[in-house]
Image (cartoon, rainbow, N blue to C red; front, side):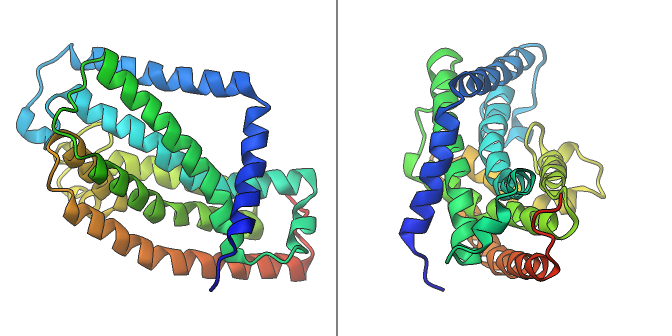
Length: 266
């Protein structure tokens, strides 16, 4: 279906203005992200690691830094739509939005665009802090690979947020769904420790989740500059499968809520 860029741009600009109006909250959020990096930097200095289990990461801090930075981007992307639906329900403006000539596809892309873009800028800040002050080695980095993996990861994970939006429309409190799913996937996919540390029966599940390919691809692009192509391809396949499903379910949930007159209920 055609995508009208002006719709996405309008939603992006609206979210940007809202965020700019809470500058202290933005600064505090960025500060907490830096604190996370410092936490794992000092944790990494307290024990000897097994380099073989960390893949392309040269140290535990490098391994965890990618998990923290990329995890922040993907969490923001996956929760955007669910929290928007909740906020619009609480403020009573969801019915007004439903009357606008906007398709479900445009609405979802527009609502995901700002959280992803804003979180990506934060990721650049955290990466700069880690490389400039915490000795994260990026001398072999493929920056094209980093960008492509980041974009593909966002595309693969965003449908989770759209599904959360559908759940918020149908059964309310859908933002908790995406938060729970992201937390579970982060644990199973090697965000802060290698998948090999999981119980044997959980390792096969961790190896097929999209977050695993996001983390592995980002670490390969950052620390070896190669080997991220397969991860990129798998993420694109996940995106191609999940987007149509998420859009279909969101459209059905939106139509059902309009017919049932429950758009303003929360």
